[in-house]
Length: 92
Figure 1 (cartoon, one colour):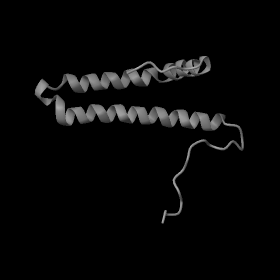
Figure 2 (cartoon, rainbow, N blue to C red):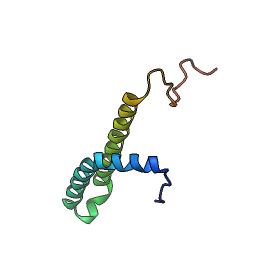
Figure 3 (cartoon, rainbow, N blue to C red):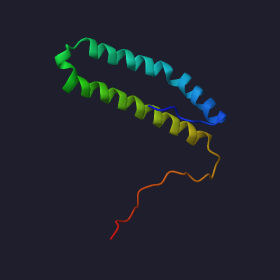
Figure 4 (cartoon, rainbow, N blue to C red):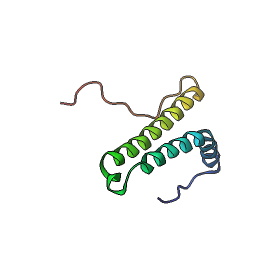
């Protein structure tokens, strides 16, 4: 993966987020390592691979949801969200 360019403010936020989630990242990495360690080479693909990927996706989703909740709390009252929502009426 390539390095992401950030402003100084964004870099500071990234550092704070990493510090906040580091424990969860390490705990999940430990559990993934344990899942992988219990399998022989021929068992790594298939169910084991799916389990490891699901753990990573679940952790990523939890992190994103947490950041969204925090930003919502910090948003000034009356601020319009930049997130687009799905249309309510069907397109004809």
